[in-house]
Length: 233
Ligand code: DX5
Ligand code: ZN
Image 1 (cartoon, rainbow, N blue to C red):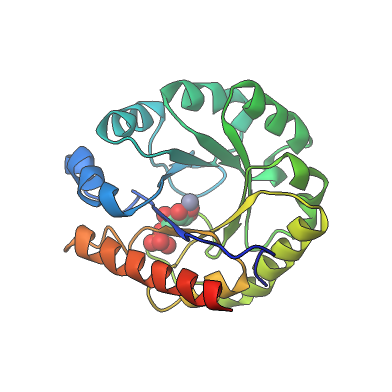
Image 2 (image 1 turned 45 degrees about the horizontal axis):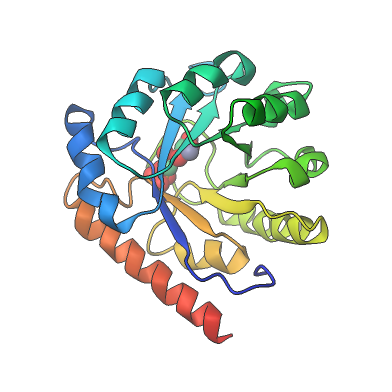
């Protein structure tokens, strides 16, 4: 189900998780011209069985491009670390609500820090956990892989939950973007957009270790085509 108003531009947000960290600034600069955000996956080895990077990496990327940064916190203590990521240059910060008894206090803290607030929904977590907060969110991050690694297969069984999220936001007259994260590529992107995605995270589909600019350009062209098709509907 689409937003009432036609989406003029579907946004592309590469995840840097599979980029070449030895040349991170170059990798980011290479694709910056055809994308809208960079998606930065922060993992603490507790919420997920992997450890990635911290605020200093966010700061380094902020210096390498002018695009907005969405920090996806896959950590057990978002309240404790949010300020460090906001100070490092995050424009939006999302967290997984099941790690805290009071997601509303994390959202309020993010707003105090002056960054956009997002809730990330794990494939095994019901959307209902986000529903009391829809009106306060800037983005609802729908995970289509179990968080922890890039390069995983898209979970098609999550797509109805994206549609449910779209309906819930419309019902709540909430303006949050729907961002879909995990396994998005040229084969799965249509399904995600069809269910209501407006921002598409693409990690291994862009930083494929071969030609990230060509890969990002192909994703960009596909999203522009889908948006035009939506305009015609
Ligand atoms: C997984 C992360 C995703 C991941 C996306 O836990 O939240 O952002 O990096 O990478 P791909 O697109 O390769 O699934
Ligand atoms: Zn992510």
